[in-house]
Amino acid sequence: MVVKKNILASLAMLDREYNNALLSPDPNKAVYFSKLAIIEYCGWLEETMDAIIAGYAKGKVKTVPFKEILKSRIEKTYGFQYRKHFRPLLVHVVGIIRCERIQSVLDSSGELATLESELDNYVEHRNKAAHTHISKILPSYPSPSATIGSLKTVYPILKRIYSLRNSAAYV
Image (cartoon, rainbow, N blue to C red):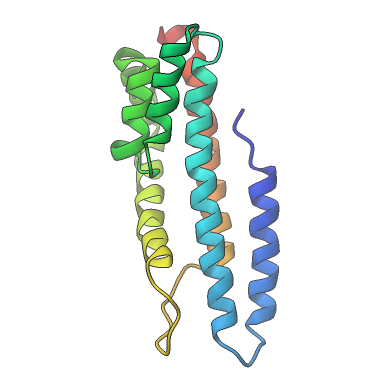
């Protein structure tokens, strides 16, 4: 199952700290909470995508060698962009036909474009947050509340993918 309770609680706490830090004389404090919210959210995205893939294969992949292939493929996938990371995993594990049907449903509803846009946007934020430090010139990041907004946009789409991957209509 795709669960958001824990990440939502973490992001809400970071949002409270961010808002308190805005009142601080140190402008870096708020930036730290924004960076942490981005890193936490993106980690959740990767873990959730891995769980969608692994959960589908659970009970279907029976032998140790093939379980190791699956584990290796998931572990070697670093990132959460739809076309670059998640779709190749879906194709590898659920199959190209089922993946095509899932994508067709998401495309016709507009959810695919929304998902890709949100993920691509957060890849840029994550890379900036992970590969820069706060110096005299403060980088700008989305506030934790904006990250919560992204979570609330992406979550139902990931949940739908989770449901569709098992749907008998997509065999």
